[in-house]
Image (cartoon, rainbow, N blue to C red; front, side):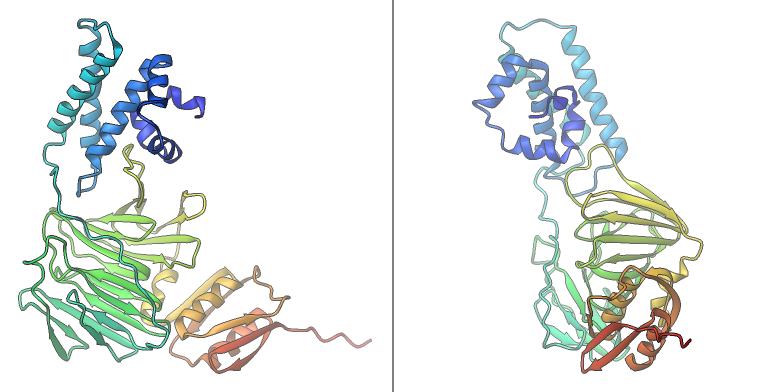
Amino acid sequence: MDNKYLEYTAEEMVDDRNFLIWLSHLSETQELDKLLDENPHFALKIREAKEIIRLLAVQEEPVLQEDVNAMWENIARFDRTYQSGFTIRRYHYRLKYAAAVLIILMLSTLGYWKIKQVESPQWYTFKPDTTVQQSRLILASGKEINLKKDESTISVNAKGHAIRINNDSLIAMSDLSEKSAVMPMNQVVVPYGKKSSVELEDGTKVWLNAGSKLAFPDKFTGSKREVFLEGEAYFNVTHDKNKPFFVKTKEVVIRVLGTKFNVSAYRADNEVMTVLVEGAVSLRENKGINLLGKETILNAHQRASFNKTDLTTRVSDEGNVGIYTAWTEGWFPFCKEPLVNVFKKVERYYNVQFVYSELFPSGDLISGKLDLKDSIEDVMKVLADVAKVTYRIDQKKIFIELKQEMPMRK
């Protein structure tokens, strides 16, 4: 164990990923007894941290900072009260008593949390089917519906208990919400080369880009609205101050009340990018308890990039957020974008695969604008001119090579 942990407070322990890994492998009968004898105050903090983890692990609602502050004030109050009271000979008994009182105080602070919560919807594992070329709606009952159009539309009518597809077909939703303890989720799966839009039952509109998936309920119940996303989507969230809206990706959770923003969370990308057009949102990592409230607040015309490798979030001001949302209107503008990133997005838009030569200048920066309504042949003509490359199209594969400069004649 790193000696720096000896100086940690209980809340710092809970919020440190490496410490939690070490703690999860800690033997109660051996290592903890040794720590108890050598560092009694440190062992007490470990007990506090473990109780916090146990209690918070069962809660469904997000931990609000004011509740965390109140909880720690109760812990501090207990410490002050205990230190001014009587002394118990054996520290083991003192620790046991302290843990018991701590639980009571924490439960009184977090009393609105349910100890036995219904299971929250887990992250959906989407299994891509390369043989299916159409977007699909997968109902909570398991029924699958092909959406057929390249840009399909879906509208949820909770009152009518139905989903309308492409302003035409009306599909009855199965009545699972009354029969299951787990919130049933419908799924929209959009393959490469397609797009879709979804209007949720609260009026929130979601535009899904190529290669994206969205899980959403028939109706938002309880004190929050929650959807799950993999890929890229643009959200226009209906305002409801009493029921915040959460977008959960595998790496981050975005909390909003009512606003417009774009999220790009493709599995193959090393970053999850959130660009805010209007309003304000908060982001936090979708792992651990996040007890210290380490959230990133994003204001309008700002971009947050969460790095999957080093687990850091960078925020930058964006003068033109339209670059990140233009895909919803069929445009792909790019400004000083790495060449490989541009080609990766074209792959998704058109459902093609690029094959690069060894000399492909992947790090070169290019600027321009593509009309996504054009054919892939027309798009490649533009890219070849801007990127100084040559190409050869063979069905779904496009072979790219560096354009050879003609030697100047003397």
